[in-house]
Image (cartoon, rainbow, N blue to C red; front, side, top):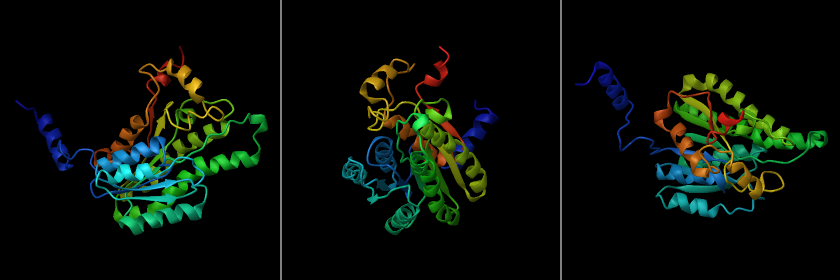
Length: 280
């Protein structure tokens, strides 16, 4: 026999349109993903396409990674893809990226503000120019991307604003990276404040805070951990080893879906349990 609670749960699931076949689907949606040429952005683009979304991919022209394989990965899923050169540190370029997405797809339902840089600088040497350069990309670039898409989401009455924060800033510090830590911590406050402001328009705002993920950025031995640092860090991860871009992309998929409509203003830590073991 089914209890009345079982029946209530079943009714709620069917009311939200979530059958086994339709859960975590993005059919008919259009997403803009910044920093999509590699790593987390590329994995998220491919997964969104598999879930039925058309995807606009922004990439920084100085990035050595070719965005065309990501475009092909989206198209191989039968979805439309466009690549847009964009410096998220520029309001004009971000606004143009959103306009190009709208021209191509006629809508913009999801923004994943993922583009970021990391720079190793001892704090005593961290001048205003280098401080401002990093925050302009890693924090202000997130806000610019959200702000440019918001009018269209408000008009549609639905939207998902998503950002990549970090375990650094959301939970722990990183020596010689205080500007990066400040920017990633700032994203936590950004999503909280904005989530309250836009909730009445059917828009949710959330962030994912990855632990150490094997990406081109984390493999940089000058500005990040590098291959040896990644190997050493893997020993600290309870569910080890180092995370993969897909580990983050799947959470972004959930947050972008209809099933996440009751979740907003949150920064979700995905670190393999590292944060649980900091005291040991």
